[in-house]
Image 1 (cartoon, rainbow, N blue to C red):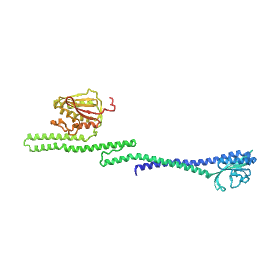
Image 2 (cartoon, helix red, strand yellow):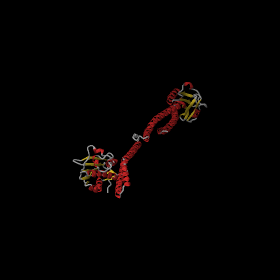
Image 3 (cartoon, one colour):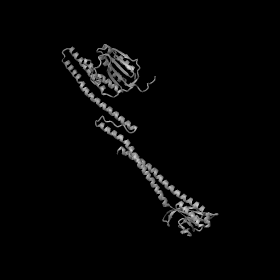
Image 4 (cartoon, one colour):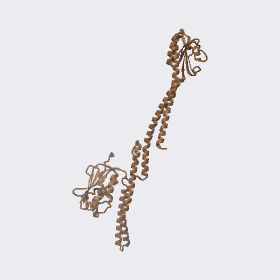
Length: 466
């Protein structure tokens, strides 16, 4: 059973229960209140009429009594009869035809009780009318003695019919409320189920190989969060698969040359006729192994494109620059370059993995030393705000190479001078920076040299106090 159907049934069941819980007690209460009001009205009417007709009944003033019973019958919507002390009819709201008739008999027990001084109210079947009636009777007193009795009869069937009509109206209102509630429940169930259905469709597309499929971010906060998490997961899976494909392609292409070189060195070593030739070939083979290891290591870094392997932390740009200066000082001197660091400029802390920032900085510093040694005299590492600039005064870039040098295995014009390298350093630096919402850039300086910039967003939180 679909989720929407389940929700609709559950909400409909709840609405039906609530409707029954309100409508049925209301209808029963209405029936009981109507019955109580009918009985109370009958008792009150005969009591008032008995009090108001005492003088006329004592005088046997039939015209005045007829006026009284006619008015009372109209108000009570029933039949009013007044009899004298012997039970003979003095006035009847049904007409003068019954006047003088003796009404005290077994078929009218309420009048018998009233003439004995008892107020009485009974609900019984009327043989004359052929229906259920409510008969209310009370004695009429004058100067302490009973001079007659008054009886009011009302049709219980008419009252029941009116009560039934009201009950039906209540039930109709309940059904209308139920219908509207079911429409609202359907809309709510559809609103809950539709985002989940669309998310399921997106999941099926991803499972079928469409890694560009994304879930629509809609619905409640929880559903929107779920869709966003699904999209983030799909993006990471797509990046991971793309990175694996690129790794396989790059490894098969880039490792073929050093592996061939290693094989040739091993063959030469086997054919060597002297110890010196053998050592030479072994040393050359070891260099090829180092080259392979470096290439594999860099390809593995790039295979984790977009993923953060290390946890983030608050990093001081000035500390990173100072540490890099110490690490590369000896290498710069070996290439005949002066390595300088500048950390006096105001800097801001950044949020990233310190190891990622160090590796990215090492890549651009190594490039600056290798290519800056071609005619340059110095390399400067400068901390500036949330960015690190690496400046050299070497040959610089050819026009249009500013972005191409970040492509994998693209070394630019300077790489044609025989400088060793894999062509992956700048690509690694950019990918590591972009993992932390930053970037890496490269541009020419005036009048000579190149500027490499690693840029990160400022840390938005608060630093711990010491």
